[in-house]
Length: 339
Image 1 (cartoon, rainbow, N blue to C red):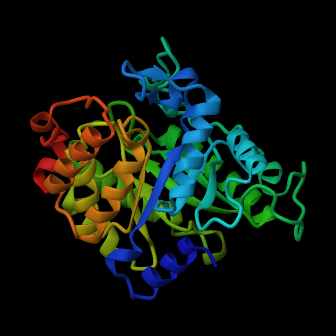
Image 2: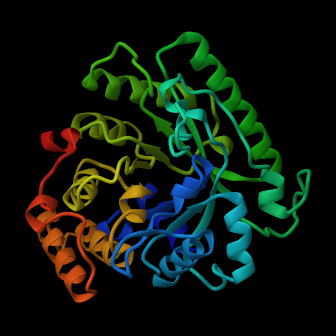
């Protein structure tokens, strides 16, 4: 049994302690962009865009560090990581992005896709990802992974939301045929929805619950990944159904204080998982950041103390910080200022 499975068991059984909080790294940016998905190598002074091979090296270093519980990647990069033996004897669970809706295509340079209402789209073939076969092969050895992320963006638009739910139903059918597990990412509307920030939190909570109400246990997600819409919205959703494990997504890179503050508030208000992408990938020292993320979640450091410790690590590694310590101590994301 992997560490992820033990933690989920403890959470659902009401035995949660802070050590059960799940940290996931989202290295699936290539599903929504191209060259820019890899982040930067800052070891040589001036930042330099990583190559794909260097990006895979970074992923493997994080797997080897053994702090994260889940490593989320594209199907093509998972194939290469398995060829390297990256997950052999590892407690880190591999997962793939199982769909790539158009609002995720924000990393394509000069493109305007995220300005348009999100449309459902899928590239990955679940059978290929899971067993290497073109069609479902029940009982065949798992050669890739049996866990993926499926995302939906509700827009408060009847036709668009019906289409998104129909695609979600088709995905669940394919997942069931393969014995494939998934976690459910629900984004806030990516275009104007006519809702205030507080209303968006309530709208998303209700959309999640109603979209799962007709789904029996066999086809329900392992956990949720949602935007942090403030303490009230997170606490409402997390307390409504203890069997529904709620996690938060990282959003933009922000300051280092934003990273640690989001972790702290998510745990405090009922979140039991954080899946961060840019907040880790764009950090000056991702491995050092992950060590401190774990300490913030465990309660051994406050967010502000963790920022100070992080800058100490940058100094030790002779890495130039993106921001000064004082600037990096600031909370800049508006939703975090109300918690």
